[in-house]
Structure formats: structure tokens, C-alpha cells
Length: 310
Image (cartoon, rainbow, N blue to C red; front, side):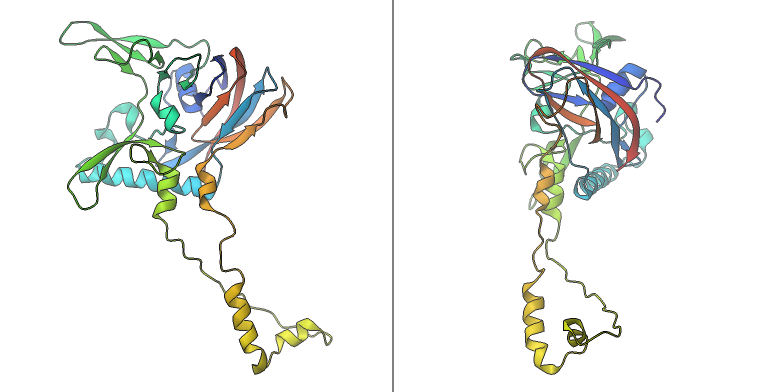
């Protein structure tokens, strides 16, 4: 990890759920781009979290093979649509959109780069001591107004416009529709159920899988033993064949877990189970967190130790 400043401090703007993208935070505070993917492989952010209030709730996506494979498959599908449009090199894309960038969930997608207001509910926040915007030096053709580039904007007060641009943009998938020539543009979201408006990549990955269970045979090594159950089983006769087949058919046929478990986030810090001021280790796929503070002006201190490939 080649970032000099790795401590990110965030201050809540209300008691509602707020979303944190740690890759954005690193980029903003270091003045250096940071992506959620590296060579189309998802990044896992490691670090510690410290809260001033024990009653806060912090969540991240589960660090499972399901989430990893979903991200890899989504990135591969995105690359394929780019190639079909004649874009075969990253250099053909805008500088800061050469890798996928996902929102945490649909509520995060609705507030990407800002807040819908309402006391902090449904908002994305950026680190303290970071300017929210800069003036680009470019001018909008119709009015001659200089264009501002915003990392955060209050969407309830003034939405992004021709003179207010987003510093970070969420990847939008162009999804061909079955049986027609139509294409549906769907913002990419990491977690959530199947949806017609958003492409929730973990749910889409699970839906794309073939769910038939495969039974694997296991060889048994025969060794000398006393006359017990194992000895009898290692030298079976014809008379047990029907029972063996019945048992094999009934046992271990069904997968004991549901893949849909990975469409929901897991608890990084559970309310009232953490001591205020205590450092708690965490892992966050794509560096995405949701934080539910107890009110406004509460702080969360995040020290990022390293990043790795999922």
C-alpha cells in the first residue's frame, strides 16, 4: 500500500445510516487515486476502527468466496461489454474510471457523492479536513460558469448539474435485455436482492450459478483392525448394497448453507458490544462500510493497515 496518510477520521451529520468508501477517503486525503479493484480483482481493506460512542453500528460486506467471485465476474462482464463497444484498452477510458467502482447498497447508490438530507439519513460522507470540491478551470459552454468538481454535495439542496460534477462516479452496467435489442443501464451495487433498477452484483452472481450439488467419492484406506464396525464396513458383502445406496442418496445431498447469506452485510462493530475508544480490527471488501452513529457530530477513526486482493 503506497499511501502516506492512512488515518481517516469521519464525523457524522446525523443519526441515520451513513456510507463510507475508504478508497475514496484515501484518494481524497492523499491526493492520489485509489481504486476498489486492481487488475479487475477486488481489493480487501484491512484496518482498525475506533468509536467515541459504544452504541454505534458498523457493517461491511462478508469476506467470502461468494463476494469475491461476484466482484470478479462483474468486472469481467463489464470488460466484455466495453470490448463489444470497441474499448479494448484502459487508456481509452477516462483516467479515474478505468476500474469498476460499486456502491455499498441501493441506498448508498441513491446518495452517491452526497446526501439526501433529513438529518443525515441516506448519505455518503468523506473524511474530515478534506475540501469537498475544487474549481476545475474549465467552463460550461452555455453560461460560461466555471465547473466545480465535488466529492460530496447536499443533493437535497442542489443536485449535480452542468456546472457541478462528481469527483467519483459509480460504474453503470449496460445490460442487454433477453429477447430484444434493448439495453438497460443499471448502476453497480455490491449488496442487495435482485433488482430491475440496480445491478446488485452478489445477487446477480448467485442467480447466474448452477446450483446442482455434486457428490464426491472419498477413498477409504483399509488397515488391519479388530472385529468392529469399521472392519465390517471395509469388507462389505452384497447384502448391504441396498442400504448403502439408500444412505448415499439421502445424506449430504443438500447444501447446508444458502449463498444468499452473502447478499447482506456482516457486523464489524455491534452496538453496545464495543468499548468506546477501543480499536477493533476489520476487513472491508472494496473498502465499503455502513455506519449508524447515535447522532450528529460523532466521530469514527479508521486506521488502514494494508490492502490485499480478495
